[in-house]
Image 1: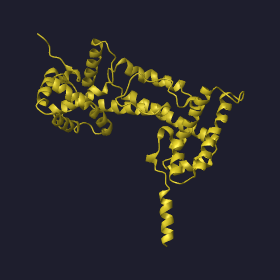
Image 2: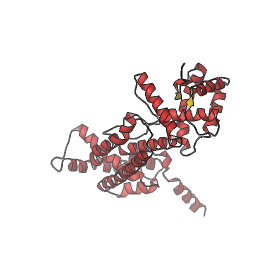
Image 3: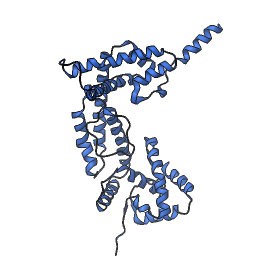
Image 4: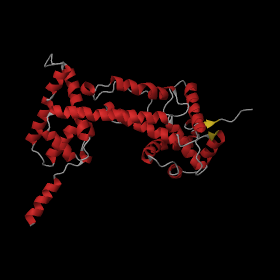
Length: 327
């Protein structure tokens, strides 16, 4: 009985932990982790790696349409990266890394490559759906690069994207940047980008469209005055929303007056930096709660700038506001 329990315990330990895998190199990290926990020997790991790398010949044959068995080193590296990207996409699609590992052991490289292509086509379909939702939640009066990202850049990417021979590449990079930079490469990165953008758009759409439009117009005007590019539009709206909650708790506004900015600056200046952080975090907690983790990461990254601006009496440089009419 004790022996049975011991064997069961050893087998239970031989489970690949998904959290320990590197998604940027999923297939290779899957093999590395399998060897670490004793699912396979070092020799078996090298054998499986060799199986994958030997599969490059199949990709080269397809790329050259059977006319050549060799390509330049640069092109070979390019095709190898695309092969691994496709296989990664297929294996990542399994929630259970043990099932992914079984596929890697038992399926041919040709099968894994083709299945990866199918998985990436599903990701492309997801991107089309998320792009549609972004257009539906488009910011009113968005900047030129914001609108061009939605109307031109994503379409240009999908037209130029090559699943078979350049799956890891980003042939077109959207000109508009989201507040949090998406990780990864290829179509997976684009999906993350569109997901981030949708989170930002939906947050801004929680507020009165005329107020949001006014904030964006202010940001565009400020950029023009400074002869600089218009940056991300969600960040100033997020900051304005927090300041509004500080001044007017539970009132859903994002548009400040010049007096509002001055009052917020004076009131916050009474606190030390840690107290300002606590007060603004309380104000932040009253914002719309959908995708709150994303907004929290962005807000926390901007808090040092806000605190510094309060102490330097330059809060107006971080927020959009309606200036007072000068007599």
